[in-house]
View 1 (cartoon, rainbow, N blue to C red):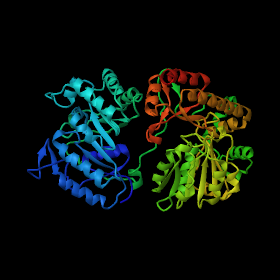
View 2: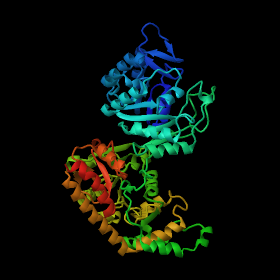
View 3: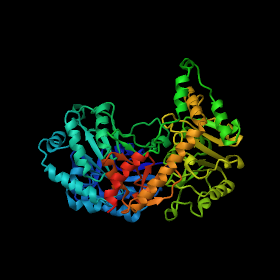
Length: 607
């Protein structure tokens, strides 16, 4: 049993969808079920749901885990309901004691978390998914039941307190019900309430309740967008929505999937956020703060639009010649892609499979594991040494043994440090497979590894036009390597993967070396200045050779730093899973943008 799965009750299927995993349903349950300690009977029912004795649940759980499945989570629902508490407590204890290698997810109604007696046990889970559906008491009663007895203000106060003391990951599920809680006023109230909570992410969903769903309309795309716009400043926010209402006789499980198992199990790549704040200072996605070369405008104006009725050069040979000339190689050593990600897709298709693993450093570019998962390839993650500014560990090669592909950025993302060139040379020489050096940020570094692309027959070096050339909106990258490697990748590329306009504009930008050199120098100068200013506030600065800084505030609370900047419309990148959530990544902006950043940080950390 391989792949990414969730084991748990059927109503965790929605969670599985949002996490990008598949569900292994329990044998004991025929309906959406939650578990409790049924002492007197073996078939206690409540609220039209079937309850199963805890001992039976644990017995089945042990049977499944004896197969050593690659589960993302073991998940249980109803975790916050008092009548289920003894059963959930027993299950939590059993999992943590007998199966500590597995992560535990608990789904609960947020209202149940008003009871502080539940907090200690629930907080033992790795992921908690509370559901929430009313921005005030009237909405809550309208969505749930008119006679619902609830002190809404007290509930929100208690739930907020729970999120702040909770050490688990909290993914809030917010249900949208058109006509009840989707007005602009409701959205504003939700934002005010959730802003006070500690949330790792927010998922928007449509109410899907058997017996009543026919009477409840589904939110449209515009409604979801309004929620996302209002709530994204609080926590990463996404929508999982139904496109058609569920009929009362629609079969809930199982549903046939037409995707490969690897795709069903895939958790897709999340691109950097593109917020739409007023007066935004955007320092989160490592874009160039300045526009591209003026040569781009000239090429754009002179482009003959009548040519667009013809296909572009499928190999972009003129552009390949330009790249080859500057890098001292031949056309046959260059392949061009629709952004570096296009090239990465070719590389993973070519060199990874269920039998051919990939080795990567950790932390690194988060797209690599996603591309590996598409191929069903095992990922060997090798932890970088945080105590040595995220340098390669001494046994890096030994840990990578068995992989067919070794890939890493240099400078590394998100840490910004550049591994010693001689260490990289040794990896290229001694690794028994393909080595890909992703130099997306190489133009900001003191040196680069382009020479290795021809020195070694197993090495590819990648570059992009997104960063140093200011063309992130264009999507164009290239790779350099031995002719045999390039010929193989050519078999995998799309027939016309780079459009005609992109080829013309990229060539114009690339050949303006004077403008390119000036902008790179300006970014490196600003990087040095910002690093000094942050160091004066006692931030830990990872030495950077990129167009960003990976820094930890004096209190080691990266999330707090991220949020206080965001509240002032300065957006940086926070990595909750990298290095214990202690760091934020700050893109080097213009002097004015960096000054705004320091205006916010200095009063807080300069005390």
